[in-house]
Length: 367
Ligand code: ADP
Ligand code: GN1
Ligand code: MG
Image (cartoon, rainbow, N blue to C red; front, side, top):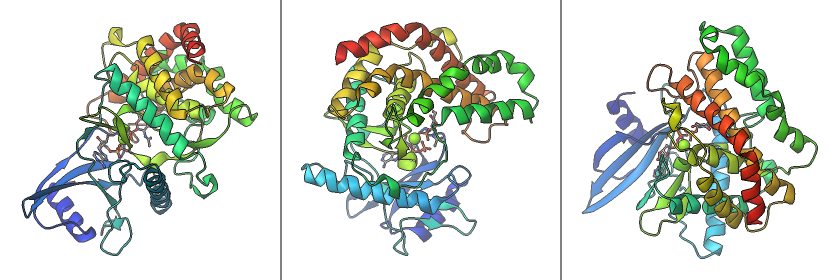
């Protein structure tokens, strides 16, 4: 969308100050259209995040916004009770002109705006172990703050989001339909998935049998969904709250490992660079257990390594599904981008399978 139109929509929709000096596309999220707006007035600089929500993916945007309003006000209350900074500790929605927290443009696009979290950075790669450790503490703590949130009031913004068994069925359907004629070129990857039916069923099976509890979880715990304070290095604010829903704590742990403990970028083409660092696994596990502060059950703690394997497998399978379906879900920036992403994930899964005993040992050593 051109910047002129976005300016118009922003001005029509939200209560922003006068004096817009910059509006740029922002961040490296795969889902929403995100922009950073800068206003300068009376010697002051004020920045905001403006997002056009992805309503192809989030089919009920009003329900989604209800979740975000509920979760952010809950977090603000908890942060205030703990004497924290309510402005930087969670996202703050900016009201639209009609008092709602979203704005629907003339073409049916859904927009929302947040305060920009200043003095903090969201990283696409782990820069140092301390940051990764602090992100783990913050994601664990996030789960703890939401432990008594009324889960029944949360809408399921994407049904079966981390139902890996259901993801497998959707993958099989996409491979069979082969709408883009791409299946023949990715037989090796398709085979890789089909050989891992048991992994796809493992954690959702345990949840069904009551062996793993449902909690209010974030469900998208990539490193770039957390803001790390530029001065203190602490994980100060968990962002990207679109998928906060009942889920498994091991999946929140696992998704962070998938992204952050990899020795290469999610879309690295040179697979020889891709592996799961046991040093970073240990670092994150230590931080996550600290953040959860004794609230995880023995079964949850034991299954943390499987959480990492499952989330990595599921994500690779989702990238491959999207590649087969013609790149309609994740934003891509080059040809075969989803296939490249899929390959890094499967390389990681293989590596994790080999390192499972080591991961188990690390977890046992931490408790
Ligand atoms: P997506 O669902 O597309 O990943 P996000 O909500 O994660 O969208 O936003 C994309 C990126 O924009 C984030 O990774 C982060 O870098 C940046 N971002 C989002 N919200 C804020 C905020 N309130 N303050 C600062 N940066 C933000
Ligand atoms: C998406 O929105 P973003 O970029 O933080 C996706 C996650 C995937 C991730 C892979 C709503 O996360 O589930 O794990 O890409 N979010 C949604 O990088 O599908
Ligand atoms: Mg994001």
